[in-house]
Image (cartoon, rainbow, N blue to C red; front, top):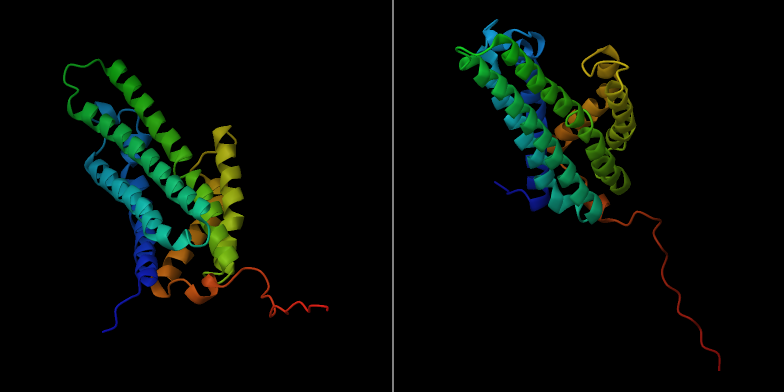
Length: 243
């Protein structure tokens, strides 16, 4: 059985990581429902069964997000070293924001478990503050950083023709839409989880899913990526000497 070349191994791993971010990130929001939506959760209201699972899923999401950038870095730096470094940095920063949100939610969970004799007003105020931290990390992490990552990664893919052009085009269209939506959420035009926000996030989500599946199934077009971006120059003509 033939072994994969290093570039194919890298894109295969990155594709797996991209798919994993979808698999683990989507259910995490639902599992956190009790913490985020019920002000009395910290006092013992509702079920807390999904909180730890939600935290675990988000940790996996953060780690697989970093994994996509680490796996792709040796490939992308051949085409743009600066953008490749920026891509790793953006994915790492997104993961850091996700971890911060997980810590805030788990802190509410701990307060719920150890609230014997505590003042109910203090508990709910503290829990509300921690939930607010979670909301802000969700906006500044998954709400902003995927757009920055797309501007870096999709630009490399588009200019180097590593994949069919429609795939990075989705990322380049989706990035400004996601940034606009996150800005609107920042100033209170709509919630981050709302109809308009979901519609404006759809292109960036489609880009990430599409590039993940493409890398997993086919890998990047290495020969065309190695070719120069500009028009091929013709043969160099010797300069005639004049006696």
